Image 1 (cartoon, rainbow, N blue to C red):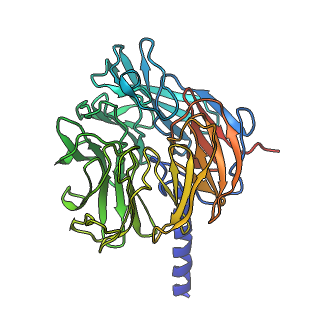
Image 2 (image 1 turned 180 degrees about the vertical axis):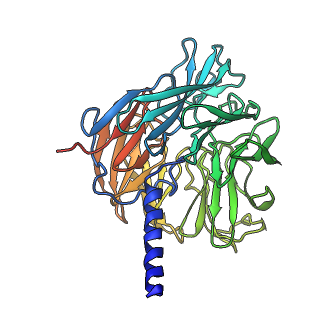
Image 3 (image 1 turned 120 degrees about the vertical axis):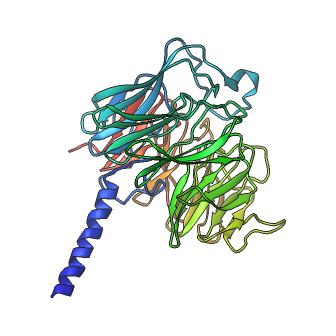
Length: 447
């Protein structure tokens, strides 16, 4: 009888833990890299007026994703004190006109707490104020890093302001750490979000002065360790990978993929990335997936890495796998979007508006490039999935719905008619989606 009761208790504990996990969205792409538990209450269709629980104007600009804890929705933004150049949609050679530029206006870096149920801004908190000392790409913002939260504090990393800060759920600063506002070699601005693991928050700063990865104590902000890196720029968010053998911190950048232990020791590294690296590493099916695909370069690789690697695991010439590289595709990498693994399939959303599908275990092609829409200007937000459907958000604010599985089938399009580059949060029957000026909670209308 005691054995039966113990089994029942463990089952309920597991279910409770799973439910709690799906009730929060604490980081960029959530805890399952864009996968959402199936829920019939989640919406398949929406517009500016249909299936909109609320929409709230967010002052300033920012491409950071919303994160959610209980009834708090957090977003960051940067408010300029004068007229700023507006982002231009689409994929183009930036050149001198649309590449890097520096602002001459004072900015206020802000964190907003939006009520999940009503959309009302509960409080706003000014984190920093000043003229940015670094440049940015015309499509980037000075608030593109997504915060991370453990339900006690919100940890906000603002590389353009040179700050990492912890703010409690009432909007009070707990601690602030100066990290340095250090430009990358292209001066396209920043975008790598912080990662959280138990009692530590981790940031990667790849820049042309002194690149580093560092870990800080969540309670006090005390620096636990700081390890130099040989990089000059990068936008990928680090991944804390809890695999069957150990926990490691996987980072992707221009020169190499590197993995560190929880004390900052280098575990393994891999060469063969492109000159600009933005997609974030993520784990699924016992593998960690790495992508890098700056247009016009070769290779534009995707790597699937097994646990337990050590040393240099770079592929040799003409190799497509080795002891720790499960598979490699030389031209599958993306410029901005991170990929999605759903079931047995690895889905790639190319920035120019194509979807591809490969076997997640072997890299074998299931279907090649499928055009999503000939009219779209481009795709920057990463895909997400639930209820057997994949959702693809374009820079035009159009979300295309595709049937999952081994055959491509476009099911519909949902339009909000405003530029967006931020990946949404999805939980509790709602899609929290950020456009250039607004934050939406999209949910099925009650009948």
